[in-house]
Image (tube, rainbow, N blue to C red; front, side):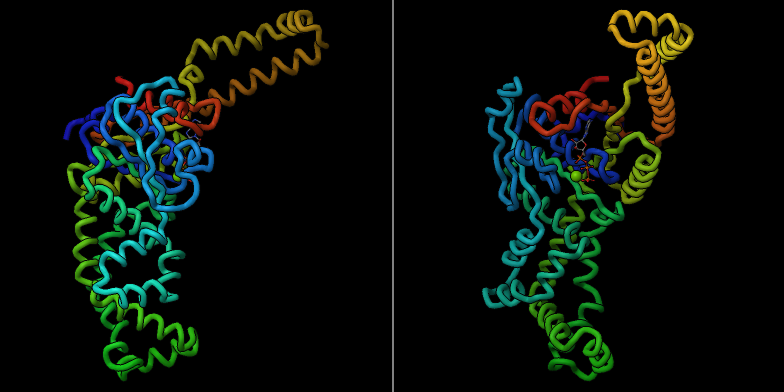
Length: 386
Ligand SMILES: Nc1ncnc2c1ncn2[C@@H]1O[C@H](COP(=O)(O)OP(=O)(O)OP(=O)(O)O)[C@@H](O)[C@H]1O
Ligand SMILES: [Mg+2]
């Protein structure tokens, strides 16, 4: 695939998955990409978001928990000075609810469903295990995509301890449900609770975990047994969707050294899995003027003309000369610090291996992005022609 700019990707792909290191602006970028696609390109656009900051969630109307898809009021676009060509919807990911819906869909009957939903192990697996979040995020994406209600779904991903977790979650789930481990775990259910084969294990587990816990495990996996096949098929389908040509990945990073290193690893892993890395967004980039030689000359001139400038400043503003000196020195020092950072980051960006992906730079805004106007402003950078 040749390089497609992000505007073309938003127009042609059905799913765009935003991923990258923690705290770099994944959620903001995903929402901005969806907002600008709905505003400028049209179509029915959905942003599936994981952990929007409170104010952003409020702005999108997805505050609170719940799995429902909500339409973003077109009036909000008008207020931001834009008449949208398409529509924007947003949904949060509620892990527990999504699991419940999945079980409800696959359970062969009401009794099995209830047995699973009320099993303590189930509750703990679905609410506490990070891996279960990763899987259900992708599963929910599959579900929403399957409805055919959206022309484009932009997906935000949670900050993972390990960048690969959600990529591999569907395949791991399929492996697990067809594994020997699972058969072994459910053995006691088939051979009467705590059958001979697992007696050794049972005795140890009993002492460490308590009998109830083991009974919960047995019952849980026993109840799930009727659903294994459905689960395996489904997980494989989710896995296929991630690798499908209708799906593309967008890696977001800042230009700082550590996030860039993490993002490089991510890019590498996407490529190893043959997923389509379509765009790299470098967010919160410092203005290029900071690395500009003319600006550096101006900063040197301040130092050279320090005495004259301090005198002029103290007269103009009617302040003590000592104050004027402090202000000038602080200016020069701040400029010099920022300039060093801007140079360092520009160098790191230049060395960032992006292959055929398109590179988008988004500046550091002077305030947080917490409303539709801010998202659209950021979105304009995402689709700007270079
Ligand atoms: N270009 C930008 N300029 C200024 N502020 C920004 C920019 N991009 C994002 N932010 C702000 O940075 C903060 C973190 O952004 P965001 O929540 O999108 O990051 P994230 O990568 O999703 O974090 P996490 O990994 O915790 O999910 C937010 O307050 C957001 O408004
Ligand atoms: Mg986030």
